[in-house]
Amino acid sequence: MTDPTNPYKHLYENPNGVGDQRPTALQIVRDQGVVGTYAGKVALVTGGTNGIGLETARALHATGVDVFITARDATKGDKVRQDILSTSEGKGCFKIIMMDMDSLESVRNAAKSFLNQSDKLNILINNAGIMGTPYSLTKDGFERQFGVNHLAHFLLTNLLLPVLERSATAKLASRVVNVSSSSHRHAVVSWEHFNSHPIIYNGEVAYGQSKTANIWMSNYLDRVYGPRGVHSLSLGPGGIWTGLLAYTPPDLVAAFKESPEIAPNMQSAEQGAATTLWAAVGKGWEGRGGEYLHDCRIAPPETGDLYSVMSSFAAPWVRGREGDEDRLWEMSEKLVGVESHNTSH
Image 1 (spheres, rainbow, N blue to C red):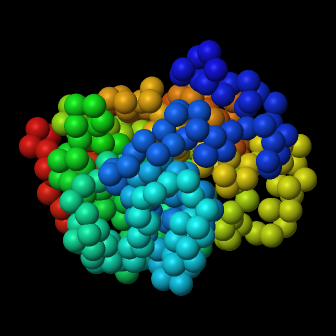
Image 2 (spheres, rainbow, N blue to C red):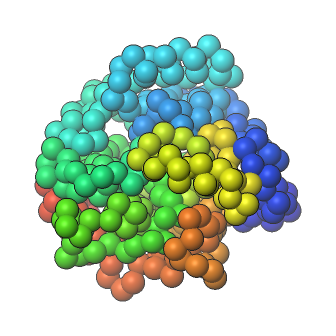
């Protein structure tokens, strides 16, 4: 591992499908030398009961951190808790916060529940998400992918920003990690039609818009709150066969599994969580942020087809065009009903 900005280059060069040589989240924790070193610190992961969220929580727990996960199903949450506590090298506690991201009221209640149980938060990982859903609305009337993937996380992050700021120290800044997707390449945020309409709705475009929003939110967070001890990174985890594909037609999934362009690039959930852990505990990211990552590196500019199914590269708008990040932040504040702690818009 000679290049600290691209430490696993040789492992990502010739992918060979699920379980190949590409690193797992736990390998990142071990390679960074942070097993057991986060004792007394606190992390919160949204959507921690399955897929890469579960493996993110598992790897984080090995650092010694106290882990909180959000869940919609208490039984699933408790099963994950028992599994991780019985197998983890970490000694931190593991707690479940109930949260339905289709409801901003539920998000507010989840933030309260967390703050009632912890007076610190060092790592927030906005991981939960839905993809390619049929047209539907959240309980608050937002197009569901934009509402769940972006607005719910925006509200949660804003409600937890004060504790993230208070938890930052000179040696360890707080980190907010937004799990985006290579599908951010499929759409920018549509200011006029972010809520879409059933007549013009395209599930793939709506998903892409929500994933671009994840990136712009991270960029804004790092720019404005970085000087106050809260840094943020966004990332594309790569392709994983998870429940995220629930709304993808079965014949399309079958075609993906046969595709020579797609199948070799797919990963296990443990591998899919690797870049998240690199962003969350990677020593090279201490005091830094504002980047979109993929394959445990800063994603280079896209040189191919922006509409290909998957890519480890970044769209031209990954930094946001002039004013985009501020505009999204201010629009999101109005939509969810929060006032920013930042006074220097």
